[in-house]
Image (cartoon, rainbow, N blue to C red):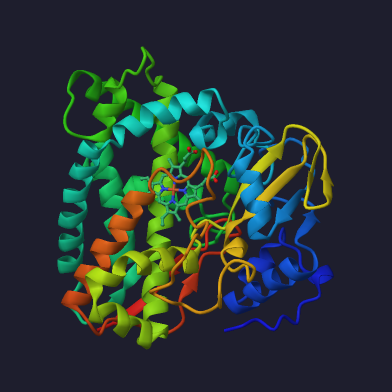
Length: 421
Ligand code: HEM
């Protein structure tokens, strides 16, 4: 598909949830028009309806839709801050900052300190343990799901697979998996009705989900301090680098971040993988004819194609001119990774799904900079192992019917995807 964009950029409002309910092709065409005609555009903040929580007054934000502007914003973290909030268009009220102030929304020197402690827990030794768990959980999930010839790929395969890996990695007991899934769905639901039924206060629901996960993590963390085993939580609570340790609060917000960042994103990438490989049988045949040779480039193409995380926010620390646009200290910018990943200046035929795409310097895991995805290696492994097992057990698996998409400007999610094989 090449969007010969019919959009007039004056008609595009990225803050309107209705925009995010439009079919994917229309949204792609809108971003193509923005890159062409108004690559840095301003929008008033979205209003959150039906909440009793008072939000601090919030100016709107600039949408960065070109690859090169997203790159600049990531390259200068001292100008483009994450601290005031990277995952919300609006400034959050203090009670929410408590749960959602994990490392993704911090700057140096605190960010470097957190990242140092946490990266150590993602050391090759720990990652090897995770690798074993990815293999085992993929096998079990597929065996459980593939017995009736059809099902829902998101709820039967993708969601339980990544959930179980994150939970096992953090030492969450199996009896708590459903709670973790529910909380992570609510946190990233963006008001989608499936997770926030009519009449629920969407912000209160997010706050409650954050609080539930925090309590759970505090209990596990305390226990692991005295009873360490081979999991990331034990490594984190006992990690001491230059006499630095994570506080209970830091451990809890890291857990909330991992659960949200690791669950929804990889699940989304897997859903888009089934969609793309069903829609492009030539690419599926190319992949399956030399799986081990092509899965590396295919995985990155899936992440570029899916762009599971649509944007991250930065806040200007000083006045700064970005591609001729004068921005002021305090202005917010959203880095639209989905749009950067279709930028015609960078990607040849960006609307072609090409499992052998090289080079493919996509921004699906963020652009180079201090916040580049900590779980990129793990996500690539999860996608690789799942697709290898899935297509060797059910080579004809494909989706049927219309996918049901998450209504969200933040996560390019799929909630349900029927399959047959
Ligand atoms: C396909 C799957 C994934 C995608 C598309 C993805 C995407 C991203 C993106 C775009 C960022 C950049 C944030 C920014 O620019 O501010 C990020 C950061 C992060 N991701 Fe991922 N992610 C994925 C999987 C995972 C997994 C599996 C984990 C861990 C289990 C994880 C943990 C994190 C963490 C902790 C950060 C914050 C890093 C920091 O602030 O220093 N992600 N991810």
